[in-house]
Amino acid sequence: MAASGRTEFFGYNDCIALENNTTRVVLGTSGGRVLEYALQGKNALMLDPAQAGWRYVPGQPVVEPSAGRCDVGPEQVIPRHPDLWFGDWQAEATGPRQARLSSVADAASGLQIVREFTLDAASSHLRMVQTITNVSTQVIDRCFWSRTFALGHGIVVMPLTEPSRFASKYVMYGPGGIDCWPQDPNIRVRDGFLEVLGPPQHAKLGMDTYAGWFGYLMRNDLMFVKRFPTFSDRVYNEVAGLTISIWYNGTEVCELEPIGPRERLAPGQSASFSEDWWLLPYAFPGDRVDAKAVAQLVGQQAR
Image 1: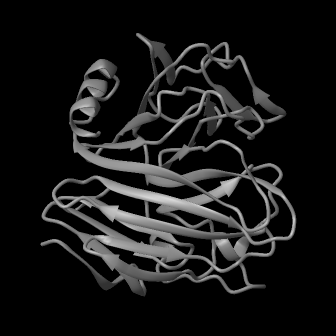
Image 2: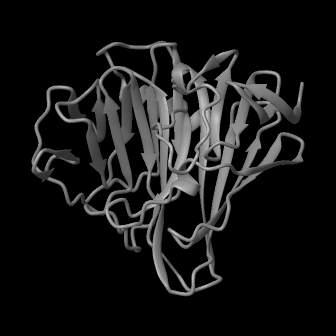
Image 3: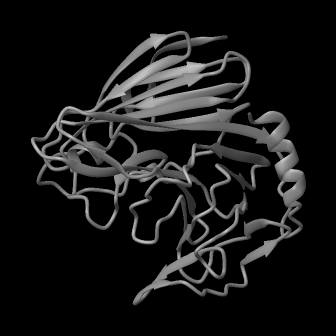
Protein backbone atom coordinates (compact mmCIF):
# COMPACT_ATOMS: atom_id res chain seq x y z
CA MET A 1 0.00 0.00 0.00
CA ALA A 2 1.21 3.53 -0.79
CA ALA A 3 -1.51 6.09 -0.50
CA SER A 4 -2.86 9.37 0.78
CA GLY A 5 -6.59 9.70 1.32
CA ARG A 6 -9.41 10.81 3.59
CA THR A 7 -10.20 8.73 6.64
CA GLU A 8 -11.99 8.78 9.98
CA PHE A 9 -9.81 8.60 13.07
CA PHE A 10 -10.17 9.38 16.78
CA GLY A 11 -13.65 10.79 16.34
CA TYR A 12 -12.74 13.04 13.41
CA ASN A 13 -14.12 12.30 9.93
CA ASP A 14 -11.94 14.76 7.98
CA CYS A 15 -8.47 13.29 8.53
CA ILE A 16 -5.88 12.46 5.87
CA ALA A 17 -3.93 9.20 6.03
CA LEU A 18 -0.48 8.73 4.51
CA GLU A 19 0.53 5.09 4.28
CA ASN A 20 3.16 2.70 3.00
CA ASN A 21 3.67 -1.00 3.74
CA THR A 22 5.09 -0.40 7.23
CA THR A 23 4.02 3.04 8.39
CA ARG A 24 0.79 4.98 8.82
CA VAL A 25 0.44 8.70 9.45
CA VAL A 26 -2.93 10.33 10.18
CA LEU A 27 -3.24 14.11 10.00
CA GLY A 28 -6.08 15.89 11.78
CA THR A 29 -7.55 19.31 11.05
CA SER A 30 -8.21 20.11 14.73
CA GLY A 31 -5.10 22.14 15.53
CA GLY A 32 -3.29 20.89 12.42
CA ARG A 33 -1.90 17.87 14.26
CA VAL A 34 -0.43 14.45 13.55
CA LEU A 35 -2.83 12.09 15.32
CA GLU A 36 -1.11 8.83 14.45
CA TYR A 37 2.48 7.98 13.61
CA ALA A 38 2.68 4.22 13.68
CA LEU A 39 5.17 1.55 12.63
CA GLN A 40 3.67 -1.92 12.15
CA GLY A 41 0.57 -0.76 14.00
CA LYS A 42 2.39 0.74 17.02
CA ASN A 43 1.46 4.41 17.45
CA ALA A 44 4.29 6.49 18.93
CA LEU A 45 1.99 9.38 19.85
CA MET A 46 0.06 9.85 23.08
CA LEU A 47 -3.66 10.36 22.45
CA ASP A 48 -5.91 11.23 25.37
CA PRO A 49 -9.06 9.12 24.84
CA ALA A 50 -11.16 11.75 26.60
CA GLN A 51 -10.38 14.15 23.74
CA ALA A 52 -11.72 12.00 20.90
CA GLY A 53 -13.60 14.24 18.46
CA TRP A 54 -13.05 17.40 20.54
CA ARG A 55 -13.11 20.69 18.63
CA TYR A 56 -12.42 24.22 19.72
CA VAL A 57 -15.40 26.53 20.16
CA PRO A 58 -14.49 30.12 21.11
CA GLY A 59 -15.75 30.95 24.57
CA GLN A 60 -16.12 27.30 25.60
CA PRO A 61 -13.74 25.34 27.89
CA VAL A 62 -10.60 24.08 26.16
CA VAL A 63 -8.36 21.03 26.54
CA GLU A 64 -4.60 20.59 26.25
CA PRO A 65 -4.55 18.76 22.89
CA SER A 66 -2.55 15.55 22.70
CA ALA A 67 -0.58 13.74 19.95
CA GLY A 68 1.63 15.42 17.33
CA ARG A 69 1.26 19.11 18.06
CA CYS A 70 3.38 21.90 16.61
CA ASP A 71 3.54 25.57 17.49
CA VAL A 72 5.34 28.90 17.23
CA GLY A 73 7.21 30.92 19.83
CA PRO A 74 8.90 32.53 21.62
CA GLU A 75 6.90 30.92 24.37
CA GLN A 76 6.98 33.65 27.01
CA VAL A 77 6.11 36.63 24.81
CA ILE A 78 4.01 35.51 21.83
CA PRO A 79 0.33 36.42 22.24
CA ARG A 80 -2.04 33.55 22.88
CA HIS A 81 -3.21 32.19 19.54
CA PRO A 82 -6.07 29.71 20.06
CA ASP A 83 -7.18 29.81 16.41
CA LEU A 84 -3.80 28.29 15.48
CA TRP A 85 -3.37 26.01 18.49
CA PHE A 86 -6.90 24.62 18.72
CA GLY A 87 -8.73 25.79 15.62
CA ASP A 88 -9.83 24.01 12.47
CA TRP A 89 -7.26 23.82 9.67
CA GLN A 90 -7.81 23.06 6.00
CA ALA A 91 -6.44 19.72 4.79
CA GLU A 92 -5.62 18.54 1.30
CA ALA A 93 -3.77 15.60 -0.22
CA THR A 94 -1.07 16.95 -2.53
CA GLY A 95 0.43 13.77 -3.96
CA PRO A 96 1.31 10.15 -3.16
CA ARG A 97 1.87 10.06 0.62
CA GLN A 98 1.85 13.87 0.71
CA ALA A 99 -0.53 16.35 2.33
CA ARG A 100 -0.86 19.96 3.39
CA LEU A 101 -2.53 21.50 6.45
CA SER A 102 -3.27 25.24 6.35
CA SER A 103 -4.37 27.51 9.17
CA VAL A 104 -6.48 30.62 9.11
CA ALA A 105 -4.77 34.03 9.03
CA ASP A 106 -4.47 34.62 12.76
CA ALA A 107 -4.69 38.19 14.03
CA ALA A 108 -3.42 37.33 17.53
CA SER A 109 -0.03 36.00 16.42
CA GLY A 110 0.15 37.84 13.10
CA LEU A 111 0.72 34.54 11.31
CA GLN A 112 -0.73 32.20 8.76
CA ILE A 113 0.82 28.72 8.88
CA VAL A 114 1.15 25.91 6.35
CA ARG A 115 2.41 22.45 7.31
CA GLU A 116 3.43 20.07 4.54
CA PHE A 117 3.98 16.37 5.16
CA THR A 118 5.70 13.69 3.07
CA LEU A 119 5.94 10.02 4.04
CA ASP A 120 8.71 8.01 2.42
CA ALA A 121 7.65 5.29 -0.03
CA ALA A 122 9.23 2.45 1.95
CA SER A 123 10.43 3.55 5.39
CA SER A 124 9.01 5.34 8.44
CA HIS A 125 10.65 8.62 7.41
CA LEU A 126 8.14 11.46 7.73
CA ARG A 127 9.17 14.97 6.72
CA MET A 128 7.26 17.98 8.02
CA VAL A 129 7.90 21.52 6.81
CA GLN A 130 6.21 24.39 8.63
CA THR A 131 6.03 27.72 6.80
CA ILE A 132 4.96 30.84 8.66
CA THR A 133 3.87 34.03 6.91
CA ASN A 134 3.56 37.43 8.55
CA VAL A 135 0.01 38.57 7.81
CA SER A 136 0.21 41.57 10.14
CA THR A 137 1.22 45.14 9.35
CA GLN A 138 4.25 45.09 11.67
CA VAL A 139 7.67 43.44 11.82
CA ILE A 140 7.42 40.43 14.15
CA ASP A 141 9.89 37.99 15.72
CA ARG A 142 8.80 34.35 15.80
CA CYS A 143 10.37 30.90 16.01
CA PHE A 144 9.43 27.29 15.30
CA TRP A 145 8.44 25.22 18.31
CA SER A 146 7.55 21.55 18.05
CA ARG A 147 5.39 20.15 20.85
CA THR A 148 5.02 16.46 20.02
CA PHE A 149 3.37 14.31 22.69
CA ALA A 150 5.04 10.88 22.57
CA LEU A 151 4.11 7.90 24.74
CA GLY A 152 5.31 8.35 28.30
CA HIS A 153 8.00 6.92 30.53
CA GLY A 154 10.63 6.65 27.81
CA ILE A 155 14.29 7.63 27.64
CA VAL A 156 15.74 10.59 25.76
CA VAL A 157 19.22 10.25 24.25
CA MET A 158 20.87 13.22 22.56
CA PRO A 159 24.42 14.07 21.50
CA LEU A 160 25.97 17.17 23.02
CA THR A 161 28.07 19.83 21.35
CA GLU A 162 30.59 22.24 22.82
CA PRO A 163 30.65 24.85 24.06
CA SER A 164 27.42 24.81 26.04
CA ARG A 165 26.16 27.82 27.97
CA PHE A 166 24.89 25.46 30.68
CA ALA A 167 27.18 24.04 33.36
CA SER A 168 25.08 20.86 33.59
CA LYS A 169 24.53 20.74 29.78
CA TYR A 170 20.83 21.45 30.37
CA VAL A 171 18.57 23.75 32.36
CA MET A 172 15.48 22.88 34.36
CA TYR A 173 12.38 25.05 34.58
CA GLY A 174 10.98 24.99 38.08
CA PRO A 175 9.36 27.02 40.80
CA GLY A 176 11.04 30.40 40.95
CA GLY A 177 12.48 30.34 37.45
CA ILE A 178 15.14 28.51 35.44
CA ASP A 179 17.75 26.46 37.29
CA CYS A 180 21.04 26.72 35.39
CA TRP A 181 22.90 24.28 37.69
CA PRO A 182 20.42 21.41 38.11
CA GLN A 183 21.36 17.99 39.41
CA ASP A 184 18.82 15.23 38.88
CA PRO A 185 19.15 11.47 39.46
CA ASN A 186 17.24 10.71 36.25
CA ILE A 187 19.57 12.78 34.06
CA ARG A 188 23.16 11.90 33.29
CA VAL A 189 25.91 13.04 30.93
CA ARG A 190 28.22 10.33 29.60
CA ASP A 191 30.60 10.07 26.65
CA GLY A 192 29.28 13.20 24.98
CA PHE A 193 25.59 12.32 25.35
CA LEU A 194 22.78 13.55 27.57
CA GLU A 195 20.44 10.81 28.80
CA VAL A 196 17.09 11.50 30.47
CA LEU A 197 16.10 8.17 32.02
CA GLY A 198 12.66 9.18 33.23
CA PRO A 199 10.64 12.00 34.73
CA PRO A 200 12.94 14.60 36.35
CA GLN A 201 12.26 16.51 39.56
CA HIS A 202 10.59 19.26 37.53
CA ALA A 203 8.94 18.50 34.24
CA LYS A 204 10.51 20.92 31.78
CA LEU A 205 14.10 20.77 30.55
CA GLY A 206 16.01 22.83 27.98
CA MET A 207 19.18 22.13 25.99
CA ASP A 208 21.43 24.15 23.68
CA THR A 209 23.12 21.37 21.69
CA TYR A 210 23.59 21.95 17.94
CA ALA A 211 23.84 18.24 17.04
CA GLY A 212 20.46 18.41 15.29
CA TRP A 213 18.93 15.12 16.42
CA PHE A 214 17.79 13.10 19.40
CA GLY A 215 16.26 9.68 20.00
CA TYR A 216 13.42 8.76 22.34
CA LEU A 217 13.38 5.12 23.48
CA MET A 218 9.86 3.91 24.20
CA ARG A 219 8.49 0.99 26.17
CA ASN A 220 6.74 -0.38 23.07
CA ASP A 221 10.22 -1.19 21.70
CA LEU A 222 10.37 1.70 19.26
CA MET A 223 12.83 4.55 19.01
CA PHE A 224 11.35 7.86 17.89
CA VAL A 225 14.06 9.86 16.12
CA LYS A 226 13.83 13.54 15.27
CA ARG A 227 16.26 15.41 13.05
CA PHE A 228 16.15 19.16 12.52
CA PRO A 229 18.50 21.93 11.38
CA THR A 230 20.45 24.01 13.89
CA PHE A 231 22.32 27.27 13.38
CA SER A 232 25.21 28.14 15.68
CA ASP A 233 25.51 31.60 14.09
CA ARG A 234 21.87 32.63 14.62
CA VAL A 235 19.85 33.96 17.54
CA TYR A 236 17.60 31.54 19.44
CA ASN A 237 15.03 33.76 21.07
CA GLU A 238 13.60 31.57 23.81
CA VAL A 239 14.40 32.71 27.35
CA ALA A 240 17.45 30.44 27.68
CA GLY A 241 18.39 30.31 23.99
CA LEU A 242 17.28 26.69 23.61
CA THR A 243 17.50 24.43 20.57
CA ILE A 244 15.52 21.66 22.31
CA SER A 245 13.05 21.37 25.16
CA ILE A 246 11.93 18.11 26.75
CA TRP A 247 8.90 17.95 29.05
CA TYR A 248 7.80 14.93 31.09
CA ASN A 249 4.27 14.86 32.52
CA GLY A 250 5.01 12.12 35.01
CA THR A 251 4.88 8.79 33.22
CA GLU A 252 1.95 9.71 30.97
CA VAL A 253 3.69 11.59 28.20
CA CYS A 254 7.02 12.97 27.05
CA GLU A 255 6.97 16.12 24.92
CA LEU A 256 9.69 16.20 22.25
CA GLU A 257 10.37 19.79 21.26
CA PRO A 258 12.95 20.94 18.70
CA ILE A 259 13.08 24.72 18.58
CA GLY A 260 14.05 26.89 15.63
CA PRO A 261 16.01 30.15 15.51
CA ARG A 262 14.49 33.61 15.52
CA GLU A 263 12.74 34.61 12.31
CA ARG A 264 12.35 38.38 11.97
CA LEU A 265 9.57 38.84 9.42
CA ALA A 266 8.40 42.00 7.73
CA PRO A 267 4.76 42.11 6.60
CA GLY A 268 4.25 39.53 3.87
CA GLN A 269 7.53 37.69 4.53
CA SER A 270 7.69 33.93 5.15
CA ALA A 271 10.12 31.48 6.75
CA SER A 272 10.22 27.68 6.92
CA PHE A 273 11.58 25.08 9.31
CA SER A 274 11.69 21.30 8.85
CA GLU A 275 11.56 18.27 11.07
CA ASP A 276 12.33 14.71 9.95
CA TRP A 277 10.90 11.80 11.92
CA TRP A 278 11.69 8.09 11.98
CA LEU A 279 10.45 5.12 13.98
CA LEU A 280 13.06 2.38 14.41
CA PRO A 281 12.64 -0.97 16.19
CA TYR A 282 14.65 -0.79 19.41
CA ALA A 283 14.25 -2.98 22.49
CA PHE A 284 13.59 -0.81 25.52
CA PRO A 285 16.82 -0.94 27.57
CA GLY A 286 15.65 0.12 31.02
CA ASP A 287 18.53 1.97 32.68
CA ARG A 288 21.11 0.13 30.56
CA VAL A 289 21.27 2.77 27.88
CA ASP A 290 23.98 2.46 25.24
CA ALA A 291 24.04 5.94 23.75
CA LYS A 292 26.78 5.08 21.27
CA ALA A 293 24.69 2.18 19.92
CA VAL A 294 21.72 4.54 19.64
CA ALA A 295 23.86 7.01 17.67
CA GLN A 296 25.15 4.26 15.40
CA LEU A 297 21.65 3.05 14.57
CA VAL A 298 20.44 6.60 13.94
CA GLY A 299 23.43 7.22 11.67
CA GLN A 300 22.62 4.08 9.69
CA GLN A 301 18.82 4.18 9.45
CA ALA A 302 17.65 7.73 10.14
CA ARG A 303 19.33 9.97 7.60
